[in-house]
Image 1 (spheres, rainbow, N blue to C red):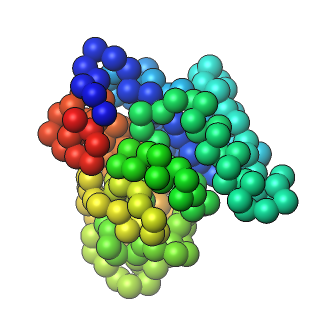
Image 2: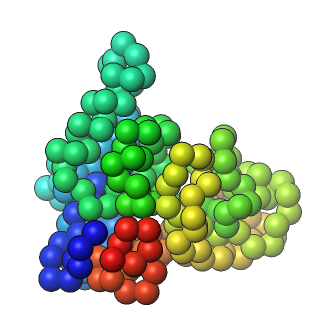
Length: 212
């Protein structure tokens, strides 16, 4: 990627649910915490995802592409790819996107896809570890510190290179719901906007994996 200073980093967000991290990014762009950045589109595999409404409220193009609407997975992957290309992203952000990113997207945007995960990878990650399950497992294990991770997306599940992490204390009376909320507020909503801003402004680490 060429030097983006003075330009807007064009971001496409892939999401399946409520879109709280999407909202954190929207807020960061609007309040100037995330600089030189524009969200050009939001795509969800779930037509009922509140994230789509969040996007539309801020004048952002929001599209549902559901695998249920296609005869086979290959057709779904192709349509998802075509929609992403139409939105012309410099960076793709997956946030609670419960669909594996298709190989055709990984190939075109290698090193330009990041994900936010609600644990300190490599703990509590991989297949089946998403949403409240992550926090349930952390509490079952009895960890004293958890957190969130921004990592690059590769062909695995939560296996790509780590970009940013932030730790969050686990408290004695935590339930999965309470811990989930604290991790979002203290870590996810902090490091995802930070990561995007770093990439958009070419700050340290922003030159990693294609950002130069």
